[in-house]
Image (tube, rainbow, N blue to C red; front, top):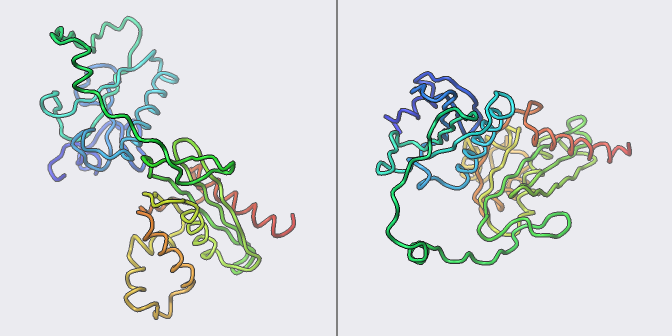
Length: 299
């Protein structure tokens, strides 16, 4: 949002005292400088507040809230935290960009964060009858883990897929690895070929990962392959399709067509990550792919 204070901070147009930052969130000290360590956690994408934010973004936000709060209590000498969010002007939200307050606390610090509320005239039974929600539906399988137990359900159609490919020689012996994650559980996939290329292995990792999901889902794909990711983010695919694949530079057409079947079945969001860096899941996929190469070598 053009005039949003926190959007300008996220873009670096306004400086801040940054505590933590990742691909999706930013945590920085509240400029009010009231409570010691008063921190705000915001998503980099604009949402007014929790009420209009999608679940995936909320997961990222609260993951950061937990990470920063644990840091304060484990490494910074605090004993606990208050976590507060105001949603809407009537709830005293001052900046209409979703933000979570972290107030680090020490024993007997004298702060009275929780307000004194007036007594409600209605009984809890009356309030419950008016406000309660309908019971959630039963869960249904979307994908199975290695023990054939369900790891996804009808209401959790957001999946994370990390992939990587490797090749010893190019062409040469190749391997690929993929990790599907949902709700703390994961499924690991892998494969290889005795004569292939690195790009083919990168494609196979994504294809096989998407094919392993049993029903249409929203899938966040994380890959360090510019070859795969930029084909979609920079719309090379659109050009190839427009030319009916007759562009002489297009290789691995059979695999691209196989991948396109999956991108039509799923709602895929592409993320380019830095390879061989500090991304744990990307490094795991790389290790899985290289183990496939070792197996094919007979090591």
